[in-house]
Image (cartoon, rainbow, N blue to C red; front, side, top):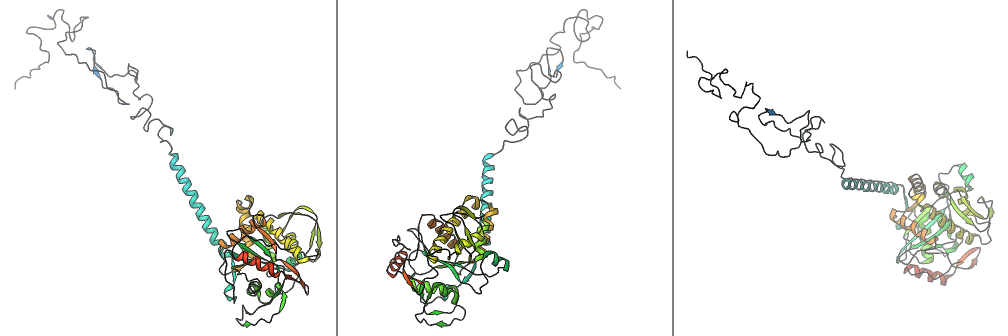
Length: 432
């Protein structure tokens, strides 16, 4: 085997050795001067391109060997590689860069947040509104069938509601009857009757005194379906209700006025008192005080808040007045105005703990016709609020005198009034 010859990158000249190099400089030389540039060409680099968090590569500088570019983690030019601070590779602000969201968090998209908040609120409002509608609709007692009313007058412009307050004691305990001074009479009668007209030319509320003298016409029995021929019998208006209920009352009002009734609404004693209590009482300002042992009324003059029991006594009182029935209808209109405004106040409408009990108390106690919708009921309520608040007209049916203790309507004025209501015109007739 041939001996292996080591070939060095720097071949020394022949016959040279460490002893006869003399004053040459180079690797292993003891001289103070650096070795010649022929040993290794110096490599110089241009200015380094900026880098973000990438360590600088080592270079060979001026024959001094490789410089790794770090001085305790910091380069001579002041550049911090990030190793000391714990910063990882990425942009100068961190993985996500600088911004309002802070390190590692994107800035919040407020426009997106507002959009989805609005969508959520609108959806919640729709769900609550729809749920409330079906809940309220299910509580209405649609027990009156106006299709049983015969020989009806033609419908005119606008909408006519017959609003009735009955003395029904159905479902009341003996304690409630005693507390509310209702007595224990069987059956039910009407304590108040009003026609509310709504249309494009304002609303008009006409009270029909229960002692009004009317003729009972031919009618069909609501239960039997049998036709009862009219005999020209004259009686008080509230007797029609006592004889055959709401259907005969509507038939009698239509026959004696010539005005078509579109909807029927009735409320009993207990329901009326419950509504007043649910709304937290109704404030009234009375011009004069009065007492009535039959209704339980005992009021002083001045401003006061009436609870359910007191309110019922107020609207039922008739024996304390000389013109008993006419004065009572005026008090009823006055109280309904105050009640409607109390129900419609923001403290009630915007407070679910007040609104829902009030709605429940009212809807539970209402009896309406089969075609009555919640929209019709709302229309009636807002018209009632407006007319009793001064935006419309409220009046008693015009009276010309009396016969056998009953109030006789003024036929000429009633005819003018009915024509104006039929044509939805502004009412010019005044009542008593």
